[in-house]
Structure formats: C-alpha cells, structure tokens
Length: 134
Image (cartoon, rainbow, N blue to C red; front, side, top):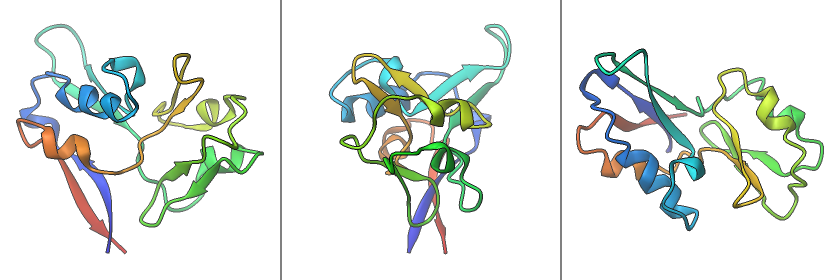
C-alpha cells in the first residue's frame, strides 16, 4: 500500500534534522536543497510549521503546470520529478498553492518532496510519520 508523509508539529523543536537528512539525499547538506522546510510561526517562542508537499491526489497543480512531462503523479499522492525532462521553467513552483516547491540553483532543478519517508525515520521527536493511503 502507498504511503504519504504527514506531521504533528506539537513536539517539534525546530532542529531541522528532517531538512538536513532530506538534502543529503540530493548530495548536499544544506537547508536550501531540502524538500521539507520547518519554519517558526513567529519569534523564538513560537510553534513550528512544516512546509512540505501535501501529496495531492486530485487537481495536482504543479503537475498540470509542467509542460515537459517532467512531473508524474506518484502512487499515493504527490509527484515524482524526472530530472532529465525538467527544463527549469519554474512553473511548478508558482503553481504550488502551499509554497512547498522551491528551486535549487546548485542542482539546477526544483526541489519537491518525493514522499520517501526518510525525514520521518530520522525525526528525533517523532513529529513526522508515513500514513498509508489507497
């Protein structure tokens, strides 16, 4: 059965372990090359929010914006990027209504969560988890 990334940010301390683990999969150790972004709601005392692909299953706006076929619907939700077909037009970035896609100049391509769950495995506070979906 397919799985999709979900989160409960109540225990999040903003350590960024998830983001750094994700970026390492791309060959970097940088918050800028991560498909998951942890931000504060406001100030040092504020709660944290997770900005990551929601794993859309219908009306996938980033996929619809991609005219080269570089994005394909992923079983369970979200998309997978074919780096060889991506021309770097950045239309997927502006199409994402939640701002979960950004462009990496280092990789010369958009960074989109693959819903692989690696970040969830390494989250020291169990804020991230994989949910089974049909």
